[in-house]
Image (cartoon, rainbow, N blue to C red):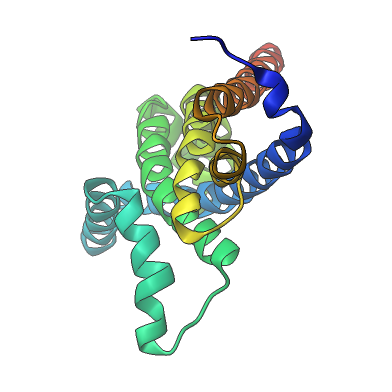
Length: 217
């Protein structure tokens, strides 16, 4: 079989536009997901059993159900409750909620990796639990969390392909539209795969640079 990529050359701008939507959705989702994941992870180590149980249940449900089902519940399910969201907004919310469950466990692990002597030292200094967490524990825990959070961002870029099921013209949907016009399935999805590979490779490299600079400071 001979591959002819010249067939899809006129549609490269469409693919790149889809890639931009993928980047935008992934970036918004990882920021929002990390914020809520930080809260969930902090609740997981809170010295208050009901809060720990609530956070653990949240993580259990989010990590135990498919992202696709979560997206469908938000986009197709919420309208039955009178809540209608634009497709892109619903997609970002779904990705953010899913990401927060994984980030929550990353945060929990990062906090628990901080030596217990740091907690004892903060109590000796007369700091409250919140002050100890914000000023002493979290800054150290972030060093432990950076690689895992970076991997979560890379994973999120790939999982964003599921947004195509909500008719969002991200990279995968753009590829499907190009294929429907050119009928060049192999060439189209090879090109889409290469763009995904470039996005994840660039993201991994950028995160490695950030991590190395953080570790040397």
